[in-house]
Image (tube, rainbow, N blue to C red; front, side, top):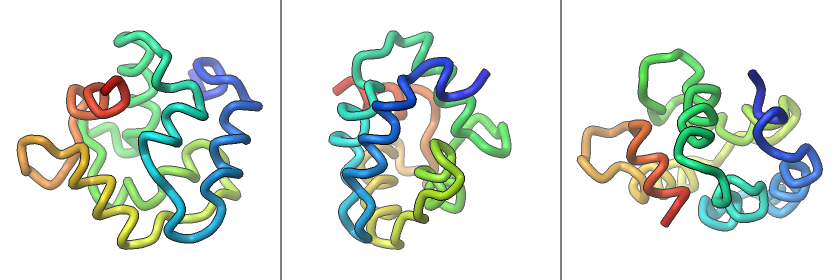
Length: 109
């Protein structure tokens, strides 16, 4: 399964266009534009599995910086500031990584 099986390619493209400039990425806005915020819990779990590049059950900081590239290989890498802000917003238990439930809470809140 790929992200385009769960999200509209045009919505993904619009979300990526919105954050092309460095330090312009905002997770909440990206989730809304891409259509992720309207997905069911089971769909979000599948999206999480796709984004969890090493299949560890977590999205770690080194994976998070390549978040946009999981949607389109030519997309930019998140800046260090964007990555840290994204991680801090989602990492509720302070373990330095984002679990499936934390991801789902962030997308749906």
